[in-house]
View 1 (cartoon, rainbow, N blue to C red):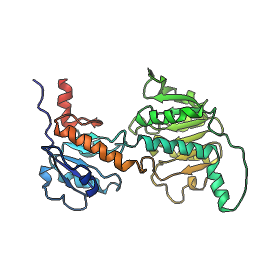
View 2: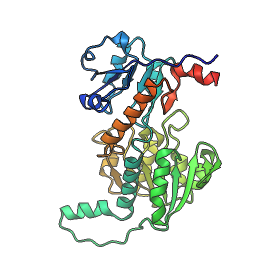
View 3: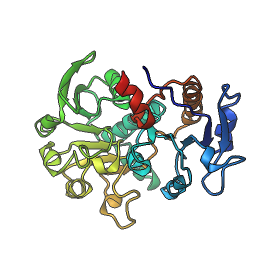
Length: 324
């Protein structure tokens, strides 16, 4: 006999804007606004089944989750979910917002690559000094690009790189072939790095990927290579990267760092061969309509008694998966 479908009757969202975007709600589902500063609007904590986490706001909101004794689902608004499974425990499901940020993060990755390889950052600094300073920069065409991460955002980055006539090599958790060709395994990373002119990192942060790009991988990169991180800061060893960048051997374009933000006196801030953006990857005008559409679809699935999409921890849906 198949397990009974999980019943999600009440979900909270952190803003009135998201609440309005969910209207009209499917039959059998109610919603309330809970911004984590006070109590949820009009409902008791014991009646909450699902919570949508805030998009930003540090970690203070996480302490509020202990007030929800019957939490079945924690829904992130981000692609990354590091720390969330540990926060709620195995009995609660955790779902990411994978797909919502893919286009925006991919376009920022491409922007960082182009800005560095065409010297746009240097031109902006020269502009502030009214300094006309023509230079020949490497450019992106014909570059050997090593893309570490072949998930949704990785696929979007690969698609955007294709018109630029690069030589693309992809790396995933394991070696395999897919519709786009061969994917190398992470064990090959140091060898592959030796031929890469641009290293792009877009892999989730977990125990296996923390410091995946370490001193060994960075040392294998040729002189002048560009390291682009749009994943999570700790995927790259900050100390090792800082050593390579401050020496002038490598360049970097970083949307994420470790720690985040970097201390004001961190040497990377003053490196002219580094570009640092403040974790803007998915934070574009596309975010609002895409997260609203995603949450509407997710809530409809919950109302239908179906498993949520993007589960990274099954929680109460584990029984259904085991039965299948």
